[in-house]
Length: 625
Image (tube, rainbow, N blue to C red; front, side, top):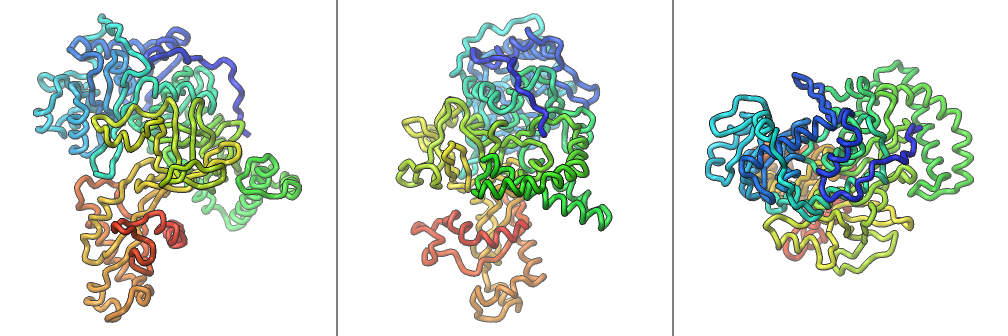
């Protein structure tokens, strides 16, 4: 039921060697089309393509007039706004590179990024963010400081408007930007706890502009709603592509997204799975407020619609689950009137509630849960799911409108290769066999900044990047992801969590012997715990001298559960660098210790996470249900 039409007049940026050339072309062709609109600030911000590129040029020239040179680094510590986009592109327009992070990030992380990136200039959200970085900032190599706000800056500091005025009548200096010129450093978590600076060039970022047309084909002036942080590589790439097609981007947030969907009636929206889950949960909660009779009717129509959609997938050869096409065809025909009724009573109202003009949602930063994917398909709301990492600019694969195969991460982008190999021997596996996902293509990063060892570990001499993910390829080259080979846990809000330091903190508790964090593609972290029975025995909460498998019922008591909840909360919150995403939600006790004897631990005493999660998948599933 998508109202998308093929667009044969897509803006062609295939000859661009810098993002600046993209905006130059757009400003020439669509100078008066609204580019950036933030209705939630005072005064409201509206910039046409011509106005935006004028500000980009002025900001870049202003920095250049203060001594910023080609190849210099600028730390951009701020959150999503039209000014963020202007500053980002103004920096890139003079051949400098930016190191980006949220103003909400922990101060120690921000100071590390500023220092590690060798930044000689710093753009911060406001005076409060600048204050947060003092006094350590004084000892770093930063020579130029700019506030993104209009606040009166301290002595020696500029604000946004002052830099614009400085550059108003100056030029960009004709910098020698090529596809290989460094554009940005995006810092991502590492197992050591120190973030790594992913080096992305103009060419890396342009792969997302060139590849986007295979997924969605917007028309100039159509509307995209932006809710994710721009420093997140997925949102940034999404904005670059959609705006390269002369769309209008409207900024929203969690507080206003529901009303903005209805008010601005967007055609496209980029988000992480957690947002689509949140919308789904809101809809299902509304169903629960209906009368008992209406709830029964809704449940019947939803159940029949699920059966219809699954049968239709088989008929259209768009299902990973094989089945009889004859039987599926008969089922689909029989349920068509019921699905039509469901669409009239339920799904049309859902579409109208979000503006009624959505062509495609795009999802990335984590895997979509199958029931979420199914629900939106039932509702006639197409979700194009993509896959990639910060190190890959980020998109490697994506589902296509003509082949939106649910349950997959889609096909590789143009000029991109995906290979499935044995994690140990690197032997290439045939389609259908699960192994380690390797990728090669023009979107692969230049490397980790000042970290050649980590770069060599991630990218082999033939250019193959180790994604750390496990998956398999269908006969038609669709990628199906099955889990992580590395330790990193990716939540549905797109946050990457390195579990080791959190686990180490938790094992400081006298009540916890061993712990394994789980939560891949979930809203929050969960924990599998091997309890230390001694303090429980001392508190008379379990019988004396009992074995773990003998006291599982006692461990379910409210008193024991409360002790472990308190222990987890305290230890996680007290660790350095605590973030709200580190909080452990559900937890469960394992029936046996983790050891070499039961195959859950290596000979070097490392927990085999994949084996643990595979063996106790039933416990994990119950935890998150």
